Length: 178
Length: 206
Image 1 (cartoon, chains in turn blue, red):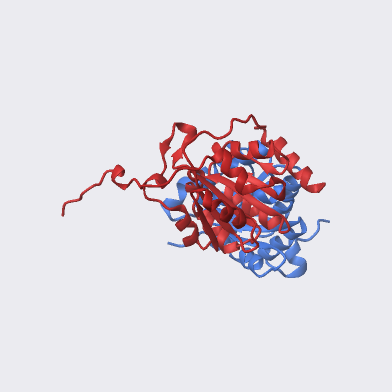
Image 2 (tube, rainbow over the protein chains, first blue to last red):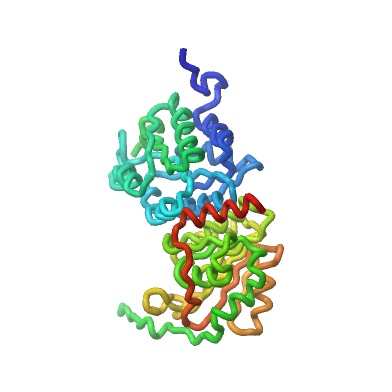
């Protein structure tokens, strides 16, 4: 018998379960460029006096903030949209050179069911670009699998010392209507 | 309508560049062991490596241009009981001015930013940066919401700069205007994973 997904036990949404899971993994710096897909997790971080919620002006700042957090013996996560992955590329050399642990949750645009042509170039480049820079990618396509994927990613990052981006796909989030 | 395009030379400022970074940075910082230090690349990394003897309280970069202030922010949030000093150049800072806004919003009072402004990209042949022309980075920092900003351009300003980076009313931003002369020659460890490990180990055992 397989264990039920967390949300089935508590009635919480996958966003709330993911937030609690990240805290269980010791995450205390939540850095983000706001995005609808991350709205709930951002609200939870902003309302939680035990963590730092850092609004970034560009996603690459988050890569550097998390490197600084690691120097200071704290753990963090970067919440961004797929287009923001492109802004991070050069700073990921910092992660690769110094082996800073790096956990990213990427809300995808420009894939399943996308109607805005401007989202495709970066959306389709996310996985190949991250992999070239040494960041592993894991996909979450449904609400029932998000916490298991984030749990796996957090272990790979904070115990394995790897960089991992969890791609929250448009199968999970739904495509924005145009 | 006739568009008149002024040459950039017309926007060159008449600025004072009289301080030598090799002398004034040690004067402002004082005992470097009072700080955890992050530096940008190029000149500022050599300033810091020389100052600390490539010490375990410093993480210096040789790439990722534009990352220094943000790294300092993450470190400041993680270590609220330690003073954090970011030493960067104006070229590095200009690559990510938004980071000043992020710092201002989070407002960690243990974070100081020392921007060594020589008006030039020294590492690549001393091409002029925007600060030689018309850009005032102290005004940018103040406009971003950094509470305490100081301009140091001569010996008289050094005590002000020194007290700003040690104040309890941070975050602070010190714009240190220096001559476009070479930073100290210093051969430091460029292997980031070793520098990360030694920094963390020193912090864990402190």
